[in-house]
Length: 91
Image 1 (cartoon, rainbow, N blue to C red):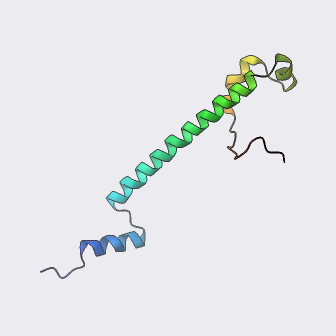
Image 2: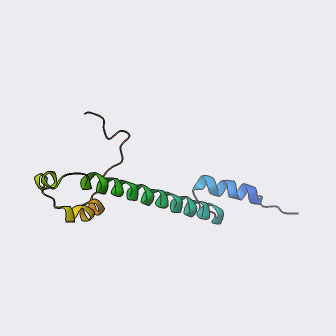
Image 3: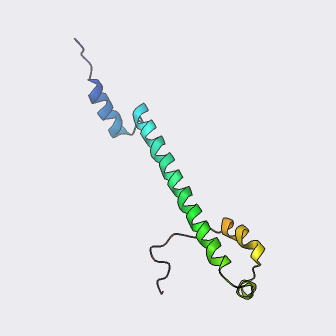
């Protein structure tokens, strides 16, 4: 007969103390990977939207903001545009 704490009791104690169990580590890894995939997908969506909006401008409008049509992809890839709930909202 065992005189020490049960495995469940040890796992519960580890969870409270912040010690990562192998299962918890795998779950954290999967959550992190899913978050990264989602973040990259959203960034790609914002980049394509930026490219579409800039491409829709006339050459004169692009010149007014200091861009040429050939720079659109470069600019869209390097901008870090925060996602907002309603980008058309008046401030």
